[in-house]
Length: 229
Ligand SMILES: [Zn+2]
Image (cartoon, rainbow, N blue to C red; front, side):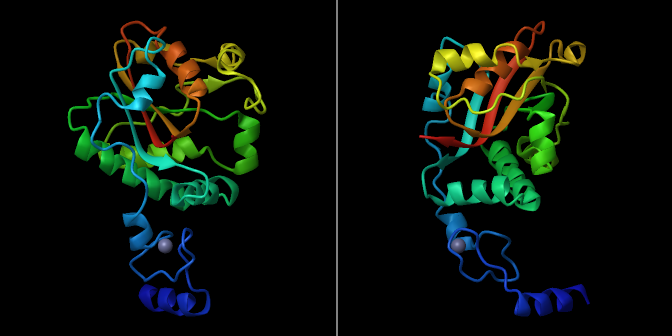
């Protein structure tokens, strides 16, 4: 019965691929198979010493550092992120979390993390959008790699508006005091996977990572759905 209703609504409101705007088959969800196949992948061949890790060299000692996709102006990945952030497509965000989780488990079977901590949004921003995309992604990843998400692992106490006009050093200084660790005791001696949707300058990951590394014997890994190149 459910299938009948699904096919019926699809006849009236056909689902379109958010990347190419082509019709989706009943097996496809949000992104068609062809667009999925053509997503720009991030350096699959250089998993360990990739240039994402290089962003943090000398600044953040990382156990592992990975990203699945490349975010470029007008590419399919940008369209996916736009749909998530500006059209509030929470289901697509969760689907991408599952995809990232599968990527992590197939390429990183040695990653033995205890918690996934999503990069927090300030509550005001989260209320505006209705959700924190890093947290929804984390829920998808968690479902696949079977590691719990610590949603309040890091708290953002200042709603810093745009940081794009500042240089890397100023940005770093600016983000220094905006994060806090409300649950630092549970993190002692643990391996934490810090997760964000897109890494651009790396300033936010750097600030969150630096504060996490103040916890005794914490090991840190970083993952993102996408990275700008
Ligand atoms: Zn498509």
